[in-house]
Length: 407
Picture 1 (cartoon, rainbow, N blue to C red):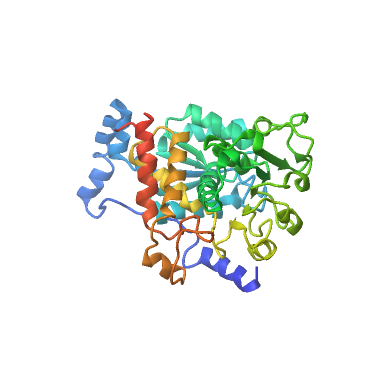
Picture 2: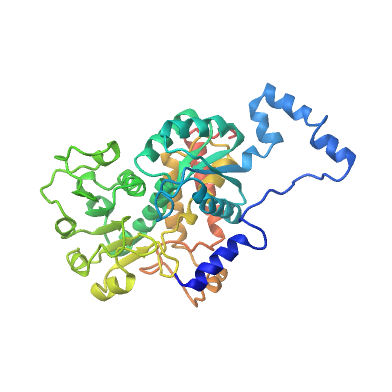
């Protein structure tokens, strides 16, 4: 990044007032009567109602449209473990996106502990304040334990977006890419470079959509995750495969799909040349992908490539998912975000990419036309239809699976 951009980013966060979010009043507070209703003695009435019926909190407070974005700062973007306080600009940014794209009120909470049990207790003890909890930037493998335990103990949706948001958007794009390439997910060989939270969630949802575990090669820093290794976490062990192939160079031979959630420039042109016809590459390392689209297309003109960057086609962007997933969950007062709700979001996103693109989207990206195809397998982030299409699909799935409290 240039010095000019760095200054612009810092100025954006500092001026005209520090930070990116604030609290605004939703009720009048101008007269003595207003204040007597807002606080003492009027506030006693909803207090009594909620004490008698906890669900009344959704009627008399902001709980039903309030999401907490919570982190301990142990895995901040691509920057690593820089501490809870340093994660605050990112968490405020997530809150900004909730409001901008789904009109969900959101506050950021930074919990200064690396102890999973302490983190879990802290979040559980404040969970009743909110309608949902978005966990963010928590390193693996602790993030798995934290999410599992909070889902078990909390009565509201708990969602680790680094895992499931990435997985949902990736799966939606991959469904469309496979269709364009004329391939079936159950027959496809998938190589996943990276074995952290996002990678594990991506592979898990692909299996739920029909991918075969026996056709998935997951690779961590020590090489291919295979059944003879004794150093595997519970999440990695789920994808341990019987094979004598130990390296990326070996497993990429004939592969249909490459999914990168690792680091820059780790997929070489030689690797790409070994893949099958019409290879599908999701090079999602940020800010620099495992292979650039320019190099990939120069090497293999038949490649279908997606990245995590907004300056290339086919951006795998979590903002396509989490605001609308929570919107759908909150609207039907879901008690969790289950697998069927996640899959509903996948199919809604995939389907939206096949619909005619509105002029407002073309204008936002300076395009004359855009249609479903190799360079358009996922909707654009500015597509206003996402709110209706994805949120309603998630809400329907919540109702159909019995986790909605009001339908």
